[in-house]
Image (cartoon, rainbow, N blue to C red):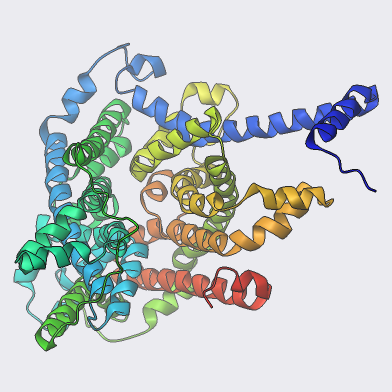
Length: 597
């Protein structure tokens, strides 16, 4: 008869082994502990260096210029007085108006799209979903530039002989800024509201009809039950709009419409640099975002929205008649044309016209693409950005995996809670604030005295890319990491696998596709990134977004738009190749894991 060991016996055995360990065995274990502590310490040093320190120092200089050798005062509010007067105040007020308008419009359109896609049989539902993700991936400055190429004097419409003065006067100004930012806000509103619509059953509407309620009452009921998602959409879109730099540096600047993010940029680019004022403007942007979150919390306080339970019934799709289907198709078509169609037509057509923007003869030609592919000044930025995007995506995914694992670990630790707070705070920071913080922190005399000479280097640019991408990428991977049961890796270790082998054979097959998606998302976002590139690009080298801006500054509209088109096509090719290689090279088990039968 075989005696089975109890857990107490096992514990006693392990304790006995520990007590009888030789000094040599204990010495072998000690370095391993030190290595674990050292790895965690290095991780936190990196997090502090790229996420905490630059932003903290930059925001502190608004109150204490003397602390960082930026002025004689140890405590002052002069920077805030300057930030809230004159043109700087105009930029803040304009950003506030644009943010509110954009949030309301995006939430309304996102709600309508989510309802059409999930609760009706409207034609083109899949097109609407694809449209949302196309708008999500397209940088705001490319949408704005597409509109500009169409409507500018001697632009595409002028070359085609189409009168455009009235439309130009409308788009070049606050209306155009709101239109472009509304298109960029629709994906955030759609994703926030769609998740809530999926869980909304029909039982409440059925009860309302029994009591004589009509369509208007049903709409009010659904809006009330979806209030948390709608307020979340409003807050997210408002924050994205007031912190956007792409439209601020293109359409808003070209139409002389001042917004806060561009005033921050001019403060940093001024000579001499006015870091205290730039920091004060950053504080104002953060306060605007905080006010949006407070408004969301106040609107929902004291109310319950728990409408899901064990008796919830699956929702049924409303069958639209011919007028309803035509209206839905027209609505989706208008959003597609304004958000994607017009900018894409503007960019592609401008890239095929010679001498665009001048009074010379015009013709349809591929010469602009030939110049880009043969000129180092035009092709170099695309190659440079491709390399930086590859490095950034690879490092970011590795770090984000570690962050997501720490955040999803059972039994929250102080380290995990602090990391969660740091990442949440970083998500709320505009990219232009990150870039300004890096310029300030890594150009201080103290930094140089410590032997850290990163200012004006590609290394600093990559670190800033990683800092802006890490918070959102970590959040993307938290859900996947939170689903992993630690018992699987423990079982692998019990059967003799090392930590690396257990991760490669157990964890990697499960998370491989989310990791690929996170890598591709980070790659495309970095390839076309603007605010960090604009402020931190080293002298003599240009990321593709800066190269486009430089070409536009030289009135080479054809070359600039050809660069835009090639950059977008390259990004789409990388995404397609990434998923194709995954289907071809990944083991069958990896590809079929999680698929519905």
